[in-house]
Image (cartoon, rainbow over all chains, first blue to last red; front, side, top):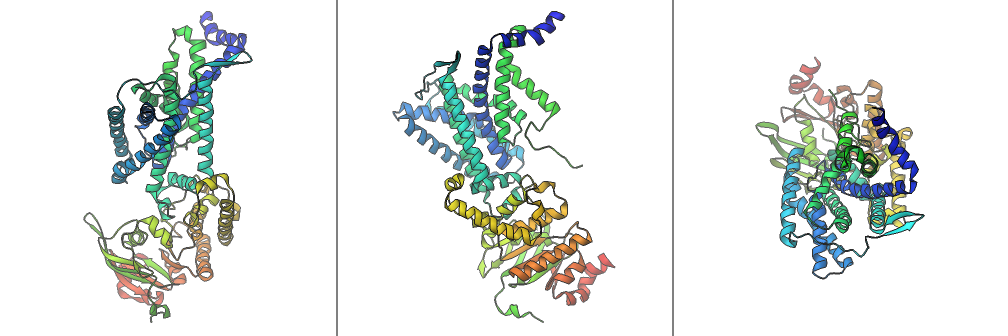
Length: 312
Length: 263
């Protein structure tokens, strides 16, 4: 019994203190993975904020964006050209979704819109494979997956680039939301549809904008994950990892998505490395979901979500 | 009997509007003219179709038949945001504010339609974007001064007491510098003092900006005090339309509404 307590509560921390360099490496790995989760979660939050639609297809949008990018590169387009074309494809997709899916279903129950995004999910999956093939593809954006040393700490170039890109994207989005006319309109729509209409905000335009932005976020997430593990169907499953991030951070909070992603990324790496051996490993696979479950019990609105107040 | 302004064409003309929700006939062939500079009160028992009429004018509902003219142009089928762009602002019966945003930001949204420019410039807050933001801020501050809500500028709207929320909603509508202001029960749920304040604001803004106002109100003493003309609805039909002192004595109105509700 004492041995067990020691193994759980003392030994891992002794390990951390004993080899700080290794601890820093684990933390960096966790932050890098966390930012990638955040990117996927961010796509969900943007759409949920502006339209209260839980977009089941966000994960497939990541896959679709990566497939399009790789497909275009295989056709011989240089990286910048392929990126611009992919952005155009995702914006066109946003217009199509607004026209074909959202507009006919305006004022319907949330659950109906949710079902519609499940349909969208299957459509994009099939359409992507039809257009670009179902093979696992390698995505080479010209950043080597190698490491360099800073004061004895190994840093992976690809992970570093991904982290910096994610940070830049989040900053740009924050400015966009706080400073611009469209940003103010977006926050207004997220808050109250009726009031937003009455001050002259066209909901349709706003929807196209958020779905476009979510599409661009999906491109960034797709490129980062694709460069790391290849572009393949399983890419769409990272959406599952975004769910606990959303539960932690709150469905309506952009900072929440970032912080939630970091907590889960760092938490699962620390758990895996230091506590993993105790239970035979694989903590990384369930840590996020157990944490999310605990949050649902204690603080269902998440760290930054709006407090759920119900009038009775 | 007719006011002098009746000689020119009305600012708003509602012509034989019929609205139906399934089997319920919410409005039946209702016609109302609103002239520039008037304060028109719409009264009637609960379920008479008052809010429906306001929702039709502001584009939230579209009538099954009939037409609506604003400044002489037919705009029966316009959407709410197009209506707002024409210069019609409104408030709601159950306050529709952006609860998470500050009072200042709420009122700023009232000016969204007047803002121009690219969001790239906005984002760097440079040059024209900066001048524009400052100009709009100045306009918003005038509204804030006018409605005496300086002290709550930075407070999230959702935290304010109900009476103040109503006032902020009026401020947001005013910030759009509307031609026509639609107020859905601006004094509902207020105490006597708050009602007096609100009446004063409505009369003041009417004097100062010459805004034409259509309002729904239940408090008969307020209606008699501030309105130039009263339109009475009952079961979706217009049963009276005229100056308050005439409408008050109308036998049909007394039977339908005043007589029953107020003894």
